[in-house]
Image (cartoon, rainbow, N blue to C red; front, top):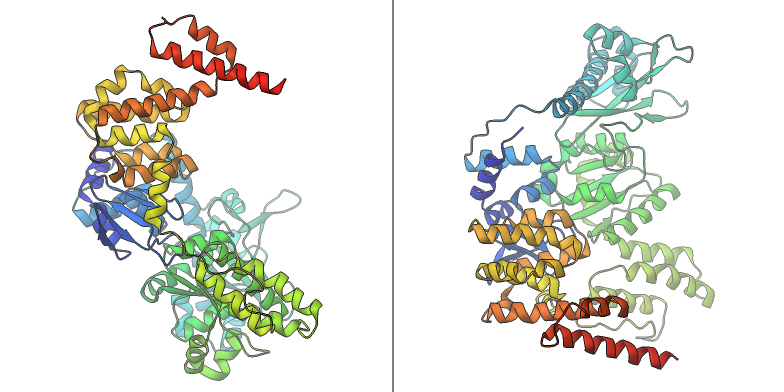
Length: 582
């Protein structure tokens, strides 16, 4: 475990602009730096980095944090792992403290789980490469043209035709069979007298996490029996909706090429890997999910869908297209010849023709429109309406207004409709800075007060004395107290830590935007502004009180108090509203 002072030192020495610039291009824009957000697709930069406050915030998707949380998101690391990575970059020596007993138990259990899966991978690999019982697996691979030298780096294995081969191996190595069962590697016998292997007489594909550690397996039969594939069940290490096969082998190439090819099956992945194509991942026996795309977004900017050219493959393509539109990730479809899959195409045509096929990949919506036109009778009103009803909802998911308009114009053209009959005329989108300025002007007075306090520490004592904290919404009071304490002590605020409890809620996003860019607070009298915001907040709170509460408060005030007359006015307004309802 890492001491708090070391974490603070890493955060201070790891300049956030330098850290973020390792991953995306930034340009100076006023007091901030601006770039395209790596966490959602966009064409107009809305990702801001504030070096003075050590925070980042995207006005498009709302994500934000500090240098450590940025690295966590980009690399898929835990907090300690991200701190250690940054510490190495900036030359901070980490002397880890001893974990507590509870922390040690959690760490030990995960290490034990990873060790057990690693033992299983070792067993399957040895069986395929060296054991006589692995001969069926070697023959099968040879028959499919897989060279022996690729077996080890690709981490292929074989589960022999025996009921307890892995069970015996784990027992011999001192592995916990109970834990192996929880990880889905073995199963308990129905009589409760021992265990048997999950995988038998199958070629084994090792599923690893982004760091290359084995976490699960996929097994394929060597004949035509069913099921053709089985996968490890979900476990503490393995979440199917967030795990992509081959991500550890692909992430460097994904970064370099800024793209990823998604295939359906293990052998499709193997075929591309053999051909030297490394920026490829496969789903692990499940449909593509938004969780998969969140992982992909850390390393790639665009997606190529490469599924089979049958009805199931087209269905998977359309589902993948919908998800990428929702996630604002540019998506292209590689159109396979009928009857081919990536494995068979590469076997018969080779890498050169595959590269040409990839270069001809069409934008997903363009592909979808052509498929709709081919499956509907567009010479009839019913057919045209069918195309419009299916295509238009997809177009409306696009974030770029001009792109939406162009697709609607193309739909009108191919359906021989009057230009503009589908509406959707191009609207000039307001720039993010302009939109942000409007949001700041209309910001809640409570948020404005916190932004004002952050910019002008000299108002802290008056802020505290006026009891403004008590006027803030309940969820903002702890933040105000921490901010006041840091200002009063002269230490300065840790803005990322202040924002952390709010997460990526609407409130958190709004406040992060104000902390990120508070130029609207420049050149004003902070003490007068504080009083103006306080009055606005009091007025807002008055409107939320009923007459009974107002009268109780009124009894405690003198008639020369400004608050007394504010309450009198509010009571009068309440009476007027009541009389209007009678």
